[in-house]
Length: 333
Image (cartoon, rainbow, N blue to C red):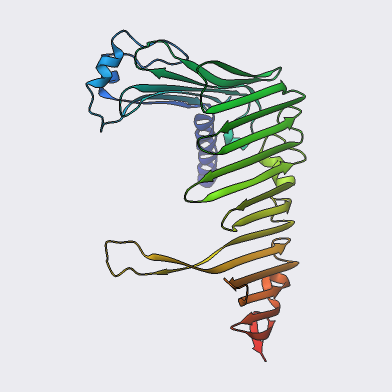
């Protein structure tokens, strides 16, 4: 009886904990002293600055971050909002970003069934209390549209369609050399295609896509079937075609073969030496087939292994020597 009572107590506690997590919410704020002391107000959703705000911004040391951010969310049904205002270091520009997401599902279930999503960005310049520009988009079940007015900004958004049947949303930045587009149909349940293209001085160019014939709100569609392909300028590659986001079908990963040499100066980071390219791929999580290759900069194989059951059986190369593998044990010739 005691064991049964303890079990009931644990079940009751688990149900209550799940209810608290599911139906709970949270609100957080981060504000500079200027906003915290209410010397001036951080505007959001296109409101004008308080009179004399720019003069007050100049009194704050340029080395200190001058911003105000407020975030709220509720788990079930999922409600999420962000209001962020940031003043530049030279105190002559400011930007206000606002996000609103209303969903009948919850990320706790790894699904998204939104009925409203909006993003807006307002630019401010010294000498004007009102925003000089607005850019953003709004997405609902019945329409998707772009909102833009005033001075042209670097970020450009496009949104159109009837999301309940078909819609298209994209964002592009010339300055950051970034483009992102999302095509979807039948709300967030039907076929969906995400394309991306980015570039930066460290990682170089990257481009690729993610496609699923049935999105089914998110994770479930990706588990059933996903096609993805992402390639970078330095020959890094990731692709997959099949269930479980790709690996349950055919998948491949490629990256640099790197060696790090310790620096003579302990305060300096190790020196990176690119020795070649390494790749691995497989079918059915490597059960039907798996292979690994490491090639030097001239394309010569330095190390490799091939075969089913994660190369439990098959053959391999190491330092130019061929070997047959049995139960992962190499038999060299």
